[in-house]
Image 1: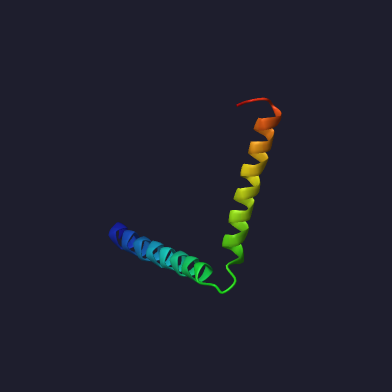
Image 2: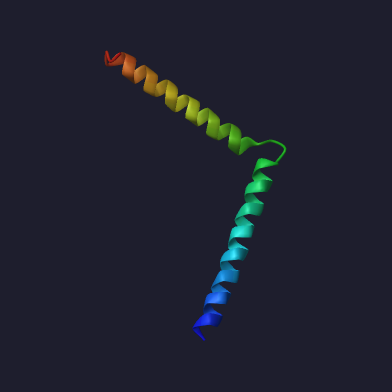
Amino acid sequence: MKEIEKKLLGIYDLFLASGAIYIGVKMVNSNNNNMIKQLFSVSRKMRLINLQSSSDSGLP
């Protein structure tokens, strides 16, 4: 009985993983790529804030 449960859980995990991969590929291949652009702009803003705060504190 436990072996059947393990197999079912494995199939369920495989199904969830393939769904996550499908969604990820769709997001990357989307026409507007808004999410990717947004992530890079937030990252850029955070670096600028860190640079400004380190220059304000007098650190080299």
